[in-house]
Image (tube, rainbow, N blue to C red; front, side, top):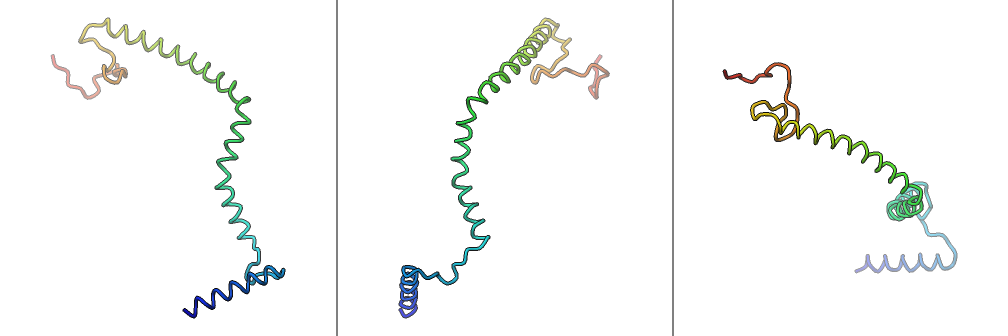
Length: 120
């Protein structure tokens, strides 16, 4: 029990010194401690600052996002229409004259047999 008594006495004496305006021994502020506090504050306040930035920039970035969506949809729509035409022409072919894989819709190789055995 003597160690706890000494520790409690030391803590009370340090609190007394602080209340008198004296410094605490070993409490010198170093750049490392300041750096660690700034990192901790960044971790804690970073998400809040990110939300504030997004909230402020939303009116500016929303029209840009709409424009990019519109342009992407235009390009994607053309590509989808071409793919649909390609699949429709494939469906009109005979069963043994297919040019695309029915599972992945990739085109078959048109040159040679690519390792396939041709039955005749």
